[in-house]
Length: 377
View 1 (cartoon, rainbow, N blue to C red):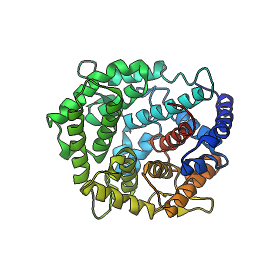
View 2: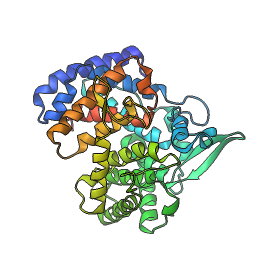
View 3: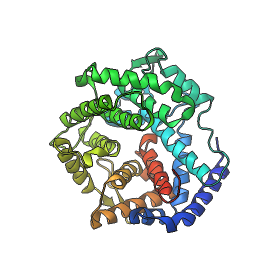
View 4: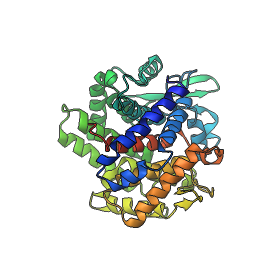
């Protein structure tokens, strides 16, 4: 694991890289974002947050779950959170974000990066992946000790993201991909028992499979994508103007709606009900952006100040929107200013409801913007 001083050195190199590549930018919104003072240091601080959230002991070792139980308590209630839950979502999004950062490290002429696939992650994945069928599950620690919760499509979709992301485990991808597609095509899913997160996770996995494999017919992938889009459409709440999960509808609405908007950008262009729902949810969330004097962002329900995690999600959503009106461009810059101010600052109130999976979108957004300023392919 890189030390603080080494991470700081990377931040300096990233800053140099931003200056080096700034003249090559073709996208004005990206240029303005990357030129906001403090961006490289905020990127480093976000990476540090994820590194520090990694579990080093217990059955969860090697993955990312330290903030997961807090999130579960917020969304589903403290009773549900009384047993410690791990999160394949946190782990998958952390791996993707750190891999992008590792690539940025190498892009800026460094010989090596994180060594992200270490023994901890290797053991973590081995314990959760079924080498016979390709499905994946998670553990839950209760009073009697660790308990395997069983394999699940949502977890399988997330582990597929890890397999796509890391070349050294990509040999496991085919078995998991074929398992996922088969379950969907054969309608072997009880959708009534699934959360909206399942549809979102599966769609995101299918998009990655499109890019990295050629052994599954595109017609099957398209059919599977249509199935999960239809499920997402059916889960839309017209009163909330978005999607939710758990017992706390108002709180979870912001998380799950932003999660869907960030991972299913097909909603911008797909005609029909899903597009209408997608744009309505986006407009409603856009109206929730509030200022803190240093910028603006999305706040946690019932909290006045913007939140780092939710604002990171909104940053990602807006950067993927095909086009922005002038007022949206200004809001996007305000969100970035807030994130730089809050991440680099010392006020813990902005971190109160920030989790590994939410802040990973800040790293992903900045690293992808950096790549767009260079010849990186």
